[in-house]
Image (tube, rainbow, N blue to C red; front, top):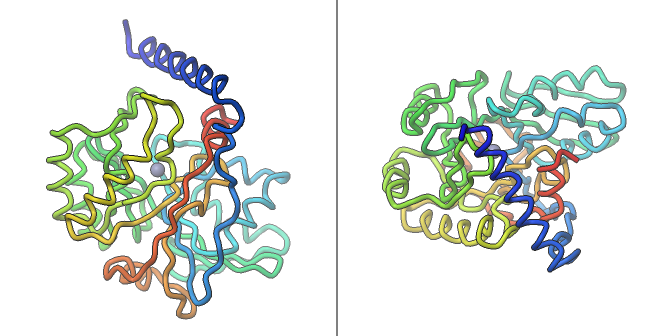
Length: 297
Ligand SMILES: [Zn+2]
């Protein structure tokens, strides 16, 4: 059996399991969480550094939703080599050609201010580098790095180039050849994670995609709890991100509140994370939003 038929079988199996569970548990399981906007905190600004927003939000009938989301807080626009349909930082810069939108770069290729209809927010370039063992979120680099087989090499390359390396969803292993092969890391991978924690700048303690969707297959809230414990034991404050997949309502479900001292700069963001001057916002995406993203709705 070739890889394609294996992954097709896995997709069908997962859909089957999910459908069975959805029928048994109904609407309540799907609409388990209200996807309301992130609370405003006086004197603070929300940074959600890890998002793969669908390019389709550039279409005229969707653009208002995109502009609404990127005109408050700091939204990470994360490049990922296997997500061709994701919005890029350059796409955000080009929004300056849209009537009524102002886009001004603060740090070239890294951070810009976006203003529209009386609201002001910031877009920040980031990248998720997919090594075979772990995924690494890089901040503060304007060029995209190549995916490396080994996460340690990616972390070293990011730091050598002056960027910041954050271990993404540390307790989840994703096999890139089989999109639905998402599973908890094994003991061997945990040993690698311990080594990576020696060189990483931060670790995601909370990733909003670690939802309880399919019993026995994707029941992942506990992996965030394990990440939190791992961060505490290895001396990290623990980062929080949405890791939005395509759908705009997933952006800023989670993130970290930074102290707002005037206009943010990359240097300020970098230092705030490094010294742990942030407060996490930890909210999952709803199961319905995850299913819609999976089905491309
Ligand atoms: Zn991601």
